[in-house]
Length: 165
Image (tube, rainbow, N blue to C red):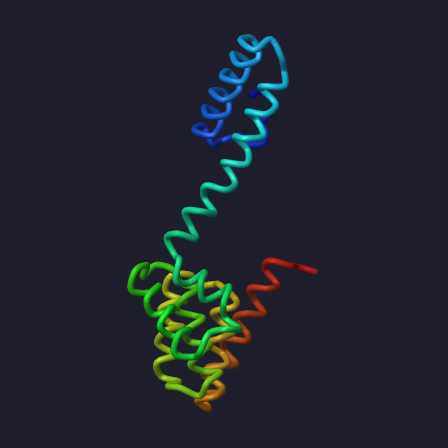
């Protein structure tokens, strides 16, 4: 557990958890009189720590991930249905709003609805560059070039902040 302190410094719950797991692995090694049981348990724990959040995310947003995985095989109507279902079930999942907006733009559907959807995505994640780029595209198609250029400039400033020369 001490070897992980630097990795988790400041996150006391994580340090407590790693300490508890380390203690449990030590007891397992002592009980089994072999390090093999502890190694297998440690790997199992690590895999669980990775897989459980992924499974929870996918099940919470099942319609969205069905859309992402089957996107090339679905009809436009089915894509829209899946994204709308995801938004209805999980209104705080910004990617679904933005992907639905992109579908509207790519298929020459309502640009006003697309702009509204992208604004909802940006309300949830204001500086997410993909969402900003979608909004720029929509505004450009609406001939609102000045607003689109302002967002492009903002995207550049974000990029410079994150990747200075």
